[in-house]
Length: 272
Image: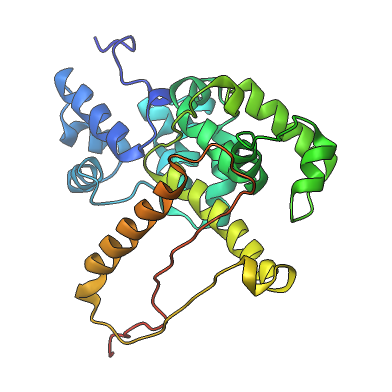
């Protein structure tokens, strides 16, 4: 008899493909072949094989039809549907899915690093205030911070940011800055949100900051696509050198954001 106790726990997975591969493997170990499982689900064994290999995408329709046969309860169905949106859908739907997943206690427990990074990067001023906390004259005061920020942020949002940064010990007063990173779709989504906000501020800075206090360059050119890895290497090395400029400075006075961009302006269309 198949028991549920050793069945893969869906709430420990952030990738639906990995979960399904493990789930099908678990059925196989319990003497349930993919063929008999496919018959139970009213699909072809080939489809299950391709889904288990990550070569075909599980759909929300599949989840709804298979829930009863595979023993998924309402919460597990909801979790799996949000995972699929996070993996395969557009940016706006991905944000909604992540917000929904973050409400699950299991997601918070197993993805605490990812959730923290997402919340940190979700608002650009979290990053700015964290960096400001190492300034010699820094004051952990919303009014002082609002006065120093070049771009408008409400006192309410600044207070919420200070509460968040203190809760997770992200300010300079707690010692060496914690490294915040994560992998996969959540990290990409976090960075996308952050870069969008920062690029908007870069545009504003053109009109708010004198040319003596900013440096914005750009270069448009034709380039073979196979040169992209070399371009990335050059940008990575350049940013690393820039980051080293503050390695031995103890009396920082301002916070700067530096972006290096390289993106295509054209796309080769396949002829029909």
